[in-house]
Image (cartoon, rainbow, N blue to C red; front, side, top):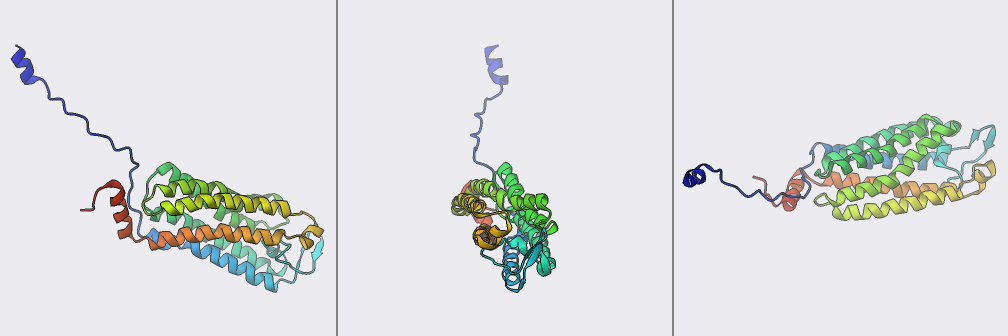
Length: 254
């Protein structure tokens, strides 16, 4: 009886050791080109406010006439008023949407790892492009929606860079950029606070302060991170992605 039991009893096979590392898959090759939207959008936006800031002859805001436009004291949104309004507001909307496409493409182009961090990164950073477009749809006289657009465009990347930094740290070949991006979150916050500290919502403040200069420095810093992100995603070829995935997982492509 005992021998029969030993014969029919199933063999116990030790469970395979589970791999606790997040699964990493190669990114989408086609998205690499679309990721350049994160480069083109900020570049065109910067070109727009540089050129229009030179040709602007002032504008009227709430019955107050600004006879001259100063990039040192006045915000970029001031170019969305007066004679330059059609061009600047179009630039806000078009380049914001281009940036949004670029952000989504970046996270499609890189090797994927942690889905939750990836989704939150896309949402938070994508809000920057959406907010930029909102600023073009609603000018300075539409105070509430324009302010909401500004907060989305400049404020959400503070959290977005932090979350994306942690995400990129787990992506093969992106760890160093992830570390720098977390620093970018802090720098963006500092410049945002500096803008609000120098901004004076009065006619005299708009003509004499330095809020316009601080805002431009902050936007250039903000967009520089998007440009770097888009360029890195474009430069990482599919073969590079597969190779780095193999280094992480320990499996070579067959």
